[in-house]
Image 1 (cartoon, rainbow, N blue to C red):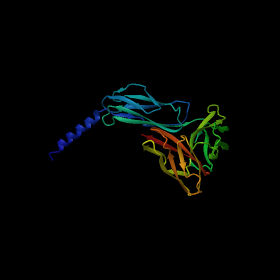
Image 2 (cartoon, rainbow, N blue to C red):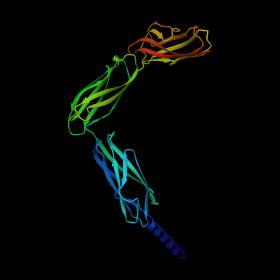
Image 3 (spheres, one colour):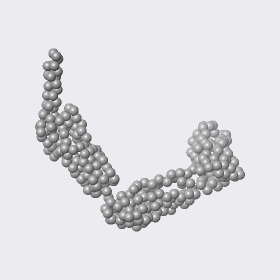
Image 4 (tube, one colour):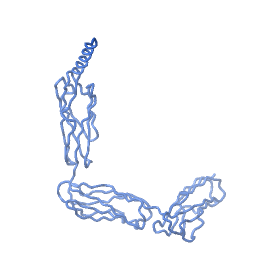
Length: 323
């Protein structure tokens, strides 16, 4: 077998090349800090060793957000030498389980980029289950309730002193104890909303905690539209000096009969025909712009008053570009 010596020479070359290269190895690639206070930075040192037979150069270290690093020794390692990479995690502004990483770039030809990871469960005196509540598509005649749990992070019972939303009489809150946890039930009553169909408010929950005396809960809400218009807005691009008319159809989404009682526009040249018809699940109207309108651009609002309890008003945009 004349090819055997050549095979042995090739294998020996590969082995020699592998043995002569630098090899970056860490004592471990992941560290778990466990539970850490939101106010306390924590540190861990990863031990890096050159286990190859050639010098190794650590070129770059790339930390993820919320993490810093310090090399506690040399960046250039001879075979067998070690250094330590100190990772510092700042949990400020975080909560729950957080995972971070460091990318270590070296001239190790096999593993030029290695990832070091760590995790921590960030705890504070009071840990809310959420800081945002959503009340979407709420009928005007119904109330909705959502719950926020204020978990204890220090082993002491959480107590709610009060919970209020400034200038939002449609939002109320009540609290109760569940072991060390305080449960806050937030109720949204759209019947007390005036002149709006959506909004964002802040519920301030006052607690017995010296560090977290006020916990803000953002509340986003939107009322359900029970009356739909077709088209959704009225627009004209026409010559001035003539009366402009646009048919408008209103439908009750649940098929309930309703009436259109009145209409009010921001421009007196806009009027609505077909008001006061008998109750029906669909109403046909006509929006009219008087011939007195002069050339120019108009951007107006039209408010229709309805007898639908879920939607007593409907606002439409009316625009015109007259030549």
